[in-house]
Image 1 (cartoon, rainbow over the protein chains, first blue to last red):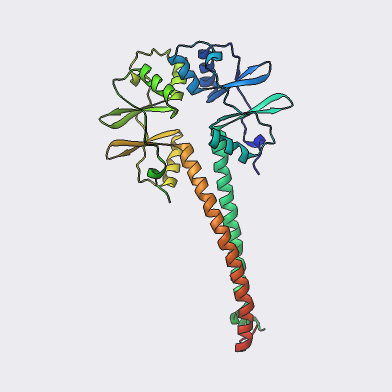
Image 2 (image 1 turned 90 degrees about the vertical axis):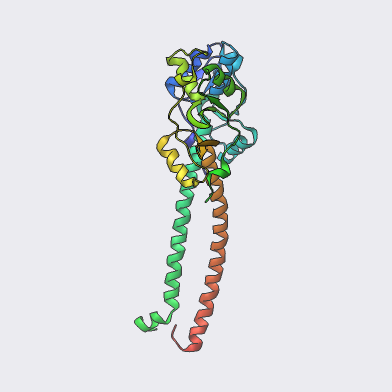
Amino acid sequence: MIKVRNIMSRNVITVAPSSSIKDAAVLMATKSVSGLVVVEKNTPVAVISENDIIKGIVSKKIKVRDVMSSEFNVISPLTRFSEITKTLRERKIKKFPVIEDDKLIGLVTETDIVEATRDFTRFHEIVQEAILAIFGLATAFFLFYFSPLRASIFGS
Amino acid sequence: MAKIRKIMLTNVATLNTEAKIGDAAKLLAENDMGCVVVLENKAPVGIVTELDFVRNLNSKNINLKDPIEKIMTSPVTFMTPTMKLDEALKIVDTKKFRKYPVVENQELVGLVTKKDIINFISDNLRLHRNIQNVVLVLFVLFEFFVFVLSSYVYKFLHLGA
């Protein structure tokens, strides 16, 4: 089973609600992340995405507070991966700050989930191929074992 | 294997090359597609994503009245509707973009995202895996049946075993 701990990005970039949209954009660009967690007194209160920043530019807002969105779900490192993918698909929530002992320790984004899905799929493919190969070998062995060919070579 | 046509989005936000950065910003803010495709005679010549915006906000101090060409990514990597998904995945891996316009007869017909490609492939594989498991169980039952039966047949024919 995939654990949140293994797929989350650990360097969460945070921003205060009172900072400017431009600062948030600069942070995103320099740290190459697609979203920031808005933090107030060490607890995540909102998230801000690239889309929110553009909306801010269009409507000429200045502060992060004016454009941040509350579309996020706080999760723990023990949350099941399937739960997150379900929330992502059904409720279109794309950011999941990870909290452990009241501390923000990571962030799971849509990109992380897509990558994990992909690795998981690839891993499963390999396992399945291995099982098939073992079955194939077993079948070949049994067929040989019960065939008259074996008896004629090794005696009965 | 499924083709791009099956998973592409068809209502793509587009602009022509004379558009301004402000127009692109407005379109990006309105729809949640995350990108605007820039067209010239119905063929895509560039793409503006949210990332382009955020990045340029920092470095170039963009003016909303500047032409869109200043921030668009050009030329674009595009896909065709008849492309198979595993070929598409190879392109995604080499190019590292998130969105790809889909072009047919030099006209834009849709847009496909990395996320959609990967999700579709993994959903497809999950179904495939379930079928494979059922087949495997049937196969084992069949094998068991054959082995038990064959030992009797061999005995009956005095062929050994």
